[in-house]
Length: 56
Image (cartoon, rainbow, N blue to C red; front, side, top):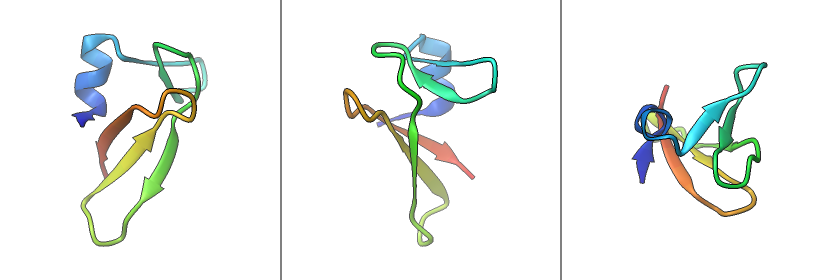
């Protein structure tokens, strides 16, 4: 699982005009999963199910 920063640098993710994170492969807005036990959130693409870590 890549971080969102690395995904943006590698071109796997992009931000739209509203600063939302989108998957570059299928252009869907990433959904956010929070686990209160972890220091990061998981961003998941609803179409291709790619996962990215995002530090809070």
